[in-house]
Amino acid sequence: MHEVKGVIAGAKGAAVETVTIRVPDPGPGEALVRVKACGVCHTDLHYREGAINDEFPFLLGHEAAGVVEAVGDGVTNVAPGDYVVIAWRAPCGTCRSCRRGRPWYCFDSANATQPMTLSDGTRLSPALGIGAFAELTLVAAGQAVKVDPAARPEAAGLIGCGVMAGFGAAVNTGGVSRGDSVAVIGCGGVGCAAIAASVLAGARVVIAVDVDARKLEGAQRFGATHVIDASARDVDVVEAIKALTDGNGADVVIEAVGRPETYRQAFFARDLAGTLVQVGVPDPAMTIELPMIELFGRGGALKSSWYGDCLPSRDFPMLIDLYLQGRLDLDAFVTETIPLSGVEAAFTRMQQGEVLRSVVVF
Ligand SMILES: NC(=O)c1ccc[n+]([C@@H]2O[C@H](COP(=O)([O-])OP(=O)(O)OC[C@H]3O[C@@H](n4cnc5c(N)ncnc54)[C@H](O)[C@@H]3O)[C@@H](O)[C@H]2O)c1
Ligand SMILES: [Zn+2]
Ligand SMILES: [Zn+2]
Image 1: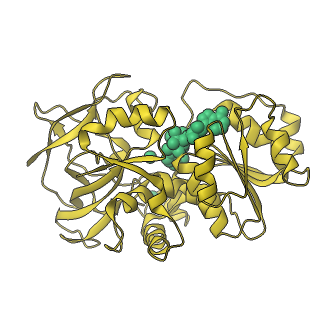
Image 2: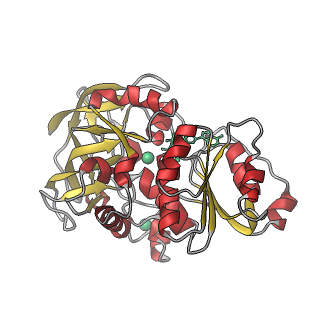
Image 3: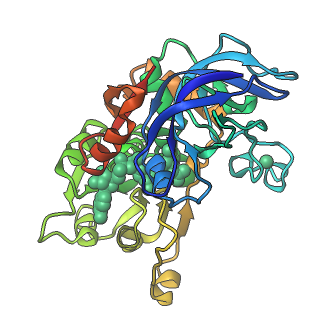
């Protein structure tokens, strides 16, 4: 048993706190990871707002890189001393989706079986089965994916969630390939990763849409060929995307905000038979209404992207290699590094649009 500092969300909407938590030694199939860096993702804020579920208290943090400290019985994929990025999907290999050869949807992904707790024994719910705003965290060994230790943890950890989700939304879910036109609505960490992936995949036109001019500047750094400021009074996002795609709309539109109005824009900004990829996570109360004739008449595909339909053991080492080769600028996602006590302030900066990613370093 280890006593370490961790950041918890204790109640719906309440400010997060840094407290002492208890982390057990790894049991069979588990790995204990010493966290080196962990990014602040919008999903952590969704947890704090009670928008994911109400299983408070949450141990937040889920975009992390670290070093394996110890492993339990039967663990073969990692050993103490290995440098890893933590994944929130560890395909089980036996659920109905894995058995159909679709492990990227795995319906029974593994997490640690022993709970981490507060010092009074209260069980913590780790965000996305990770909980890495903590000096040590306990995960299922399959969640720890070995990557090249040459990648600095502040950058490497980001592929554990936002970067992988956005990258995979474009190339895995959206199937973006050479010559495509792509529009990305919402250019935070997730949207910018979708832009970078579209550029790497050879898209001809990559349109970035956001309501914040600073985010659009960032999007251009990742290779967006055009930007649309959706906050401008005279701008109609759908018409603006059409104007940049010969009047047709984009082959693939990626919604990386998680709101009905941006979903609607994505739906109408597609070319005929085009693909919409929803990677933004909506609040449970949100609804959307669309004319059925348009759903039919426009054809194509309306897809959601859970974690960029990734296979961490396949995709994490690949993204790290692209980074080390200078082809994927993970450093550009790291706006600032902060201490563990800085998470609440980082949420505020995220809401004010001041950062792409704040990253806690230990
Ligand atoms: N599907 C997944 O597996 C997965 C994984 C990680 C994150 N997410 C979700 O993806 C979304 C984005 O995450 P993030 O970390 O990039 O968040 P973020 O807050 O960094 O970025 C959101 C961006 O959307 C922009 N925006 C807000 N309203 C807009 C509008 N009306 N039109 C255009 N742009 C608008 C904001 O200015 C901001 O730049 C969140 O909903 C998050 O929960 C999903
Ligand atoms: Zn499975
Ligand atoms: Zn996340």
